[in-house]
Length: 418
Image (cartoon, rainbow, N blue to C red):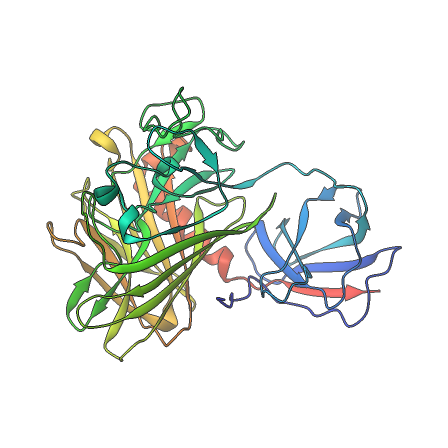
């Protein structure tokens, strides 16, 4: 189980939540405006029911209770909130026995065919073994090649066909994309998401890169790929598993495990926990590797197969470094697309560029120190011009990435009163 780094200051409540309500004061100590700021409050003891957070003006803040530490108790209260600079907002927490049915702002989606030409069935977990990669199986069994995760601004997917790259679904609407994306009229897997629809479409060609925010590992000076490339009939992973750990209205969590990945003469265990919440053209990933021998470097990719522009490195603040690209890097160079990764400064080791050919190619990558089993937490960003026409301008996209990194850096202050 991956231990998640705190999204903000975490407070342990030392007694039970009262039925008449608990007051939670949220303060933004910074000079910047926070929009959809992720806030996590760990409740030591939780009342039964659904959380209801109400402001002092009577507005409800959608929230959810999660069990991210895996102890079987959903005691972490999570929500996003807007906070003006140097301001405090007071919320009242109660619990309802009726589901409030908040507007859905995050989602996970996956489906699989049990056999060729059989209908896709919705799934929330699956295991891939070498005999079932498309190059060996002879057909694609997973809807959209693997699980999708999205929020109100952007959608992404993980290639669960052995490639283990991450891709972007550009969105034109705030509501969640249809559940049947990637399913044809006959109910089987179909690549219909490279055609424009009302909700948007797949916009990024990943080639043999890691996509945007996908990971690989450098062993010494050698680039290694976690898995195979398209068309391969063999892979270097004994098995990979994904699991919908949590799907909620304001936060969804996708777990990925790669068991006995064997590059060169090594054997590693690789874990990823993808987390997405509303209000950002991005997702968070927590990646860890076990079995290290000391000469490994984690690589976080930014595909450059459709871009001729150089990568830009920006030291944002004491916490984060941003690597940014911007070009008409969608299919057929049809639209402007900004791509970025936001990496923690304390483990950042610079960046590099993969060759144009090979098992890991067509990619810039950020380099990060890794320690045995310890997750590196970073963010992957994609800004499409049809989601926000401002993303046509590289300076606009750069300002967005810097602003996002600064917002992520702010630790809000939380005070609980009974």
